Length: 82
Image (cartoon, rainbow, N blue to C red; front, side, top):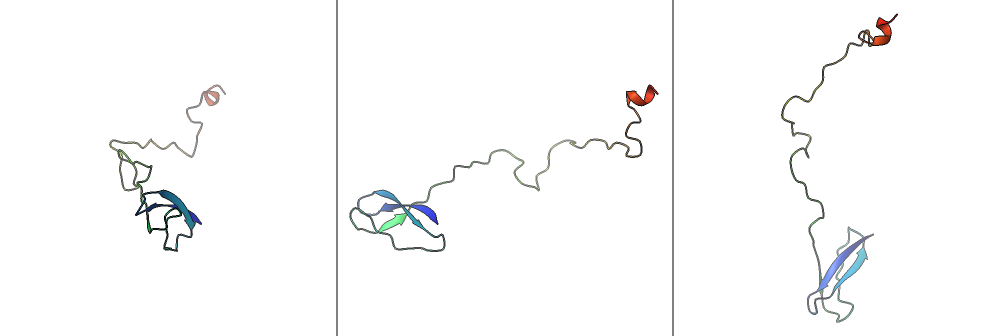
């Protein structure tokens, strides 16, 4: 069940009604009995800047050089000490 805001067309009262998303019931105002309309408000999420899509690409090179898997300790200090 989801909760939706409705506003009375006669008196302007805003109230909540809980019903399944698949239903579109005829809603009336609990105070005066007039028809009510569903209130749509913008989402609180704001996407700003780039990088929000998997097709976006970063500027410049962000990859690093791969290390050799054959001998990962080729340049380590502990190997040179032996």
